[in-house]
Amino acid sequence: MKPAGLTLQQTRQHYGFTLIELLVVIVIVSILFTYTTLAIRSESPEEIIKKEAHRMERLVQLALQEAILRGEEYGIEISLDGYRFVRMTDNRWQPIIGDKILRLRQLPLEMELEMSLEDSEIEIKSQTSEIANYMSKSSALEEYMSDKTLGDEENETDEEQKNTAKPHIYLLSSGEITPEFEIRFSILGVENSYIVTGDFDGSLKTEISDL
Image (cartoon, rainbow, N blue to C red; front, side, top):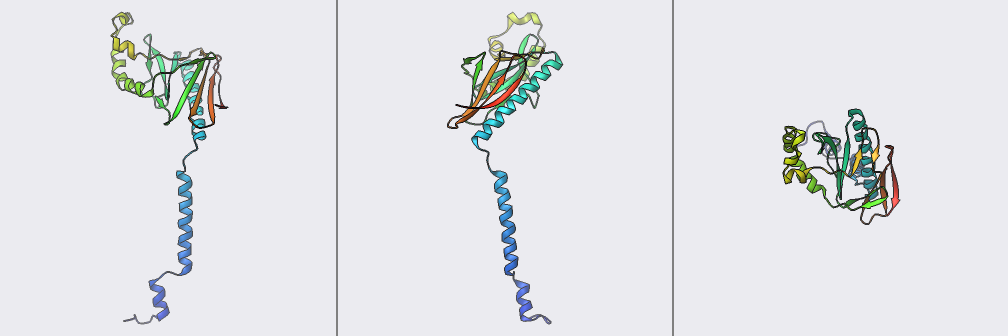
């Protein structure tokens, strides 16, 4: 039975949507979909290369500033798909532990590094997976090494010698970088690459380059 006081037209409007209401809903959904698509749109390979190169430049600059302020020697150990910062501690190069900024950096999949030191191309052999395996043991190793005296070096085990960091680039407390370096960031199939350059006087720059 139709409720008292309602006409037939009012009853139909009570139970349905008008065409205008449906159009408004469609427009709102379309706008939300557009913004969501833009938000999740992946970066182009060249943008990813550029971002990683500029990130390394900023991190090296930060590490160099820390070396100056702390009066300590820092270094960079390069692998094919990443890099890490190390510091001279107890006459030994040790990875920097517990630093959220100067931590082990692993590059995106398919990105690789090429390195030249003093204009001589250097073959990079290690992978960051090897470094990460070492890092998982480095905290315990660092604690162990802190209990040793400087005269215990001749008693090192083969494992300790193997796990000692070997930086390719030195960031000195004097503000100098040695040797001068060029590190190219590239992805196979992408025409452009980016090169991070470090000079002896501590200056750094990042430039686009053709492969």
